[in-house]
Image (cartoon, rainbow, N blue to C red; front, side):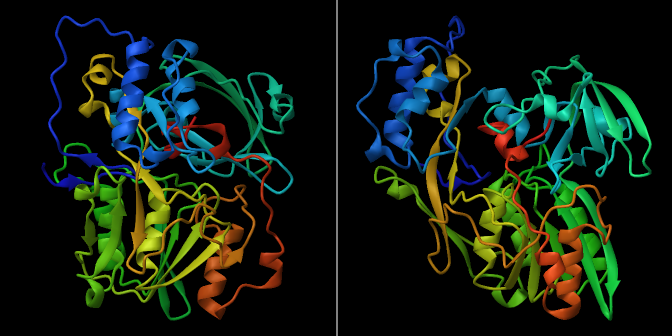
Length: 439
């Protein structure tokens, strides 16, 4: 067998796949597909010893219901099904939709939290900090469900779907925009700048998801390369990395970022190890740092939230033994496990364009730390304030990070701002969309 090749909060193993039959007729809901799901889980699932006896495929109307019936509860909140095309597109930022995220403030007002620049929303000039006061003629409270969440009924991501939004802008004026969903290339870097804090040069980097640049081999991101070269050229002494809306993505890109951040003195040391199930122990491996560039940082400040998951947490866990890390905002999501797509190892899944992405491995840092299913606790809990744009010192979490750099602590006013929303954007999605959330 060939060497394991990690590419995402997931991974991709570099084995060859069978060629599908040219005359096969896809039927993704056929019972044989459910049987193929079970057989693949028996072989690769991280908790394969916890699988129940195979249920009757005919008792389930959908593949998703079948998969849910056999996953290991409560630890597995992550295994999912998608199509091969959707999976491949997501990890290189090929999206469809309006192209925005949202977040609530302490009073449950809804704001744009980020906007992708090349998406329909970005091209229409939408900005973080705009308050969403209505959608399709209804106020936001009208979309609240009995469970306390929200169902905004914006439809699937298919290009051509139209929705109308009413915004209250920071200057107090209102605007109504009709926006048409379309295909677009999403950007991972939402904002970057260098500011002076006393005698220090501080880099601020808002990183939304670990997406690779299509066509690069080995897997990496040109956006990451450009940002890190920007900070290096600027001679930064401190770095704030904002992961508050980062649900994960490519492990290869996470490794690339860590290789820029790690100090030269630790440039060849152990980054992380992975563990597979007892049938696949021969594929387990360790990954070492390979220092890139000239950044020399003794610590990194991370802005985190419950929306910080998967590859975001891998970066925090892997760097922790070697650097002083300060987490500001809220506890992270809690995903110490990852996945790689299994259709390439099962011809029935290939023929029916079903991509099975179950949990297949766990990771541990150089000190053996793993199993962080409750997430990483914030060192300083501070409330989110999406009404302010990136780099605005009134943004509580960003302002708290600057304050920590200045004073080595965060004052009570900042810490008393903490609240945990009853419902967040990460709650609006499952599976692949939860890792790359956007409307």
